[in-house]
Image (cartoon, rainbow, N blue to C red; front, side, top):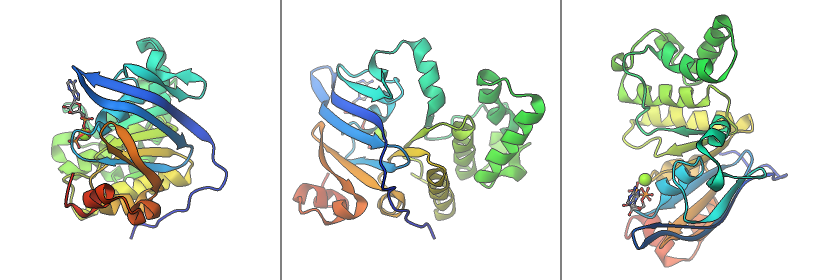
Length: 254
Ligand SMILES: Nc1ncnc2c1ncn2[C@@H]1O[C@H](COP(=O)(O)OP(=O)(O)OP(=O)(O)O)[C@@H](O)[C@H]1O
Ligand SMILES: [Mg+2]
């Protein structure tokens, strides 16, 4: 069973989102978003389809560019960094692609070694050790020499998570990490999020999976009409009296 972990008492502000506005055509997907993300927390972005959760997540690593506002990571505003400067940010903030996005022709080991070869000076031996230890975190050390096509969808997803954490990022962004997974693989992914949290890693999650939200999340931000309509601990969100929020949680309305 997945255990809930308590929020650390000393909070360190890690990412500061201020006044984000994003338009596609004349439609405002984000209409003034302010949000603080603290080191070591698990924060879930929750909201109906098309409310801009994925766009917000991608904005955190400069894959989307807000039309207004800032996203401070330390003293840098991610929104104004060049592609070159974003390379450093993306070593510290990892993005887990929904379906793993593995290289089909490379073994699991080579898929995981890829970012290490690109971004570190580690020796082949060190790379091997890092690959094995990271795979063991997702319970897949025995699959090291297999190709992605030899793995189930859930295992591929876990290899994708392993590849995202192999550079030991401070923040991990997950867009619907458990969508479509069976209970076993879902639990494995949620356990990884909690294990990383124990090591001080921050996770930002987009999910429709209420069990995931209420079992691993410290705080929830509920997006509606381009704004954060509700923000609180999972427990607070569960008990807030906002009918729109409760309608969403119960599945009665978007
Ligand atoms: N590149 C784009 N061009 C035009 N519109 C876009 C683009 N990317 C996103 N949108 C629009 O922005 C809105 C928010 O998209 P986003 O993918 O963030 O939604 P979401 O909250 O993640 O939804 P879901 O739960 O369905 O994944 C949607 O209306 C979408 O159609
Ligand atoms: Mg989405």
